[in-house]
Image 1: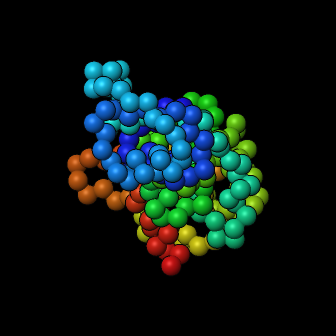
Image 2: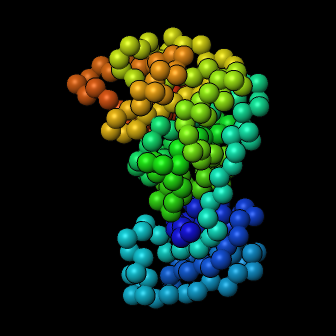
Image 3: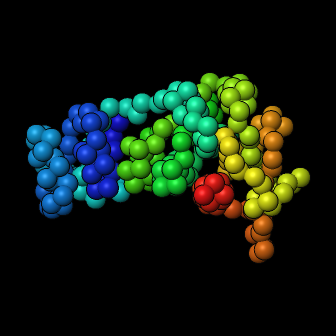
Amino acid sequence: MLVYGRNVAKEILKSNKKVEKIIIQEDFNDDSVNSLIEKRGIRPEVMTKREFLRFDKYSHQGIILYIEDFKYCEIEDFIDDENSKVVILDHLEDPHNLGAIIRTCEAAGINGIIIPKDRSVSVNSTVMKTSAGALENVRIAMVTNLNQTIKKLKDNGFWLVGTDMENSVDYREIDYSGKIALVIGSEGFGMSESIKKSCDFIARIPMNGKINSLNASVAAGIMIYEVIRSNK
């Protein structure tokens, strides 16, 4: 997988992730990144600015890394904690939203993220860049059947909290103690009906302006920090 950007490069080079190749622009001068490259014992390929134009569609900041593909984990890796908090993304499609949510989850200390295999964005170079390196410290499980996964979570003592403006309660009125799975719906359609029916609570974020919806990553951020705040 191709990844790019200085923050991402730093996190990857600090980790034990295998780096297959590094390409830097001839005027690249980030001492901290160069030091990490040297510690890894990797000789980067140096390109001129003209040669680097082939990567212009990326916000590369003068550095490109080729690394092994992202390794997803199993949900069993993060659901056993008696106070586990997880985020379920119901067919999210925008890699920038996924990257931003990953960054928030890492900052807040969420135990893990669950995404479906089909009709959903997966971890790619854009997600890696948007997450600003947080991806290296977040556990993500990719599942074949979201409904079956939710049943498994409920069997393991999780309460499901969905997000929607209709038939819902103020997000600040919900008890988030114990095991919580927070569901964030897709950008265009929100939560699917089958997932909504599985939820124990449907939360809404009050909207006082003329706009009646929030970007998925913004809504996720508000909800995630309410879940964490309520457990302190």
